[in-house]
Image 1 (cartoon, one colour):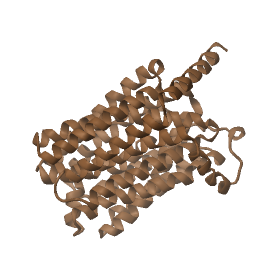
Image 2 (cartoon, one colour; image 1 turned 45 degrees about the vertical axis):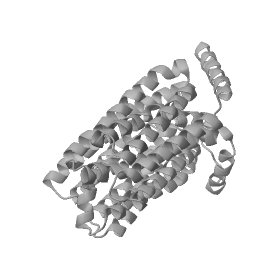
Image 3 (cartoon, one colour; image 1 turned 90 degrees about the vertical axis):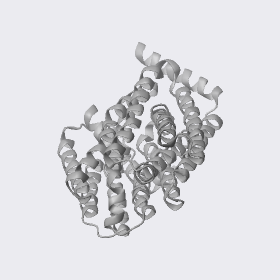
Image 4 (tube, helix red, strand yellow; image 1 turned 180 degrees about the horizontal axis):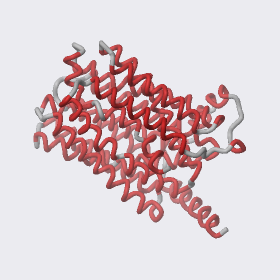
Length: 403
C-alpha cells in the first residue's frame, strides 16, 4: 500500500520531470520559442489545480478508489494525445487534460493518508511517502534524457501512457480507506461551495500560503532550469538530469530528517524553519543570477538549498491543513493542492513570460516566492498558536495511545 500511494503521489512529478530535457528539442520540432513551450508546464498546472477542486468532494462522497481509477483513464488519454500533438497550443491543451486525470491520484493519495493517520503521525507518514515518491523526479529527467537519446520526444509521452496503464492495473490491490459510514452525503454543489468556508480560517490560509508560494518557486525552478542550464550554460540533457537529480536527493534527505524530528519538535515548527531556509536561498539565487557570480555553481548551490526545503515545508503544511478539518479530508486536500499548484501556474508562467535567455527571471521569481512562503508561515501560523495546537495534538495522541 505504501508503494502504491507513493506512485499515486508521484504522478505530478512523473508527468513533468520526464519530459523536461526534451523542452529545447520540442521547441524546434513544433516551431515554437522557448517561452511558448514552457507554457506546456503552465497548461498542465491549470488542469492540475482546477481538477483537484472536483476530485476532493467527489471522493468524500463516493470513496477514494473509484475517482482514482477514472482519473487514471483521463491521464492515459491525455498522455496519448500529447504524443501525437502537432503544435505547441495543441500540446498545451492535451497537457491540461492529462493533468486533470493525474491530480486525482495525488489529491486522493493525500486524503487516504489522512484517513489512516492523525496529527504528527500524519506528517511523519507524509514525509515517508514523499521520500519514496522522490525516486520518480530523481530518475525522471535522466530517463527522459535517455529516451531522447534513442527516440523522439514523442516516445516520452508514450512511456507515460505505459505508466498510467500499469498503475491502473495495480489499483485493484489498493483497499478503500473511506468506508460508506464516514462519507459526506451532502450534494456536490454544496461541498464545492464549502471551499469558501475553509478559506475563512486563518491557519488554513497560513498552511495553504506557505505551501503555495513554495510551489510557485518550485515550478519556476522546473520551468526555468532547462533554459538556464542547457541553453545558457550549455550543459548536456544528460548532465541536466544529474543536476536536477541532486535537488531530489536533497528533498529525500530533508524528508527523512523531518520524519525523524516531527514527533519531537512539531510539524509547524519544522515548517517555519524550512520557510526561513527557502527565503534565504531564493535571495542568494537572485544575487548570484543578477551579478553572474559563481557561474553555473552560483546557480546550482542556492537552487539545491531552495529545493531541499521541500522536506520541511510541503509535508508539514499539508498535514497541518488536513488536521484542521479531518471530516473533510478530501475537500481540504483538494483545496490545498489547488492553491499550491495555482501558485505553481503563476511561477512557471512568469518565467515563460519574462524569459530573456538568462537565468535572471527564474531567480527573481524564486526569490519572491521564497519571501512569500516565509511571511505566510510567520504571520498566519504564529508561534503562540503553534505551541498550543501542537500541545493539544500531542495530548490527544497520548490519550489515544493510553486507551
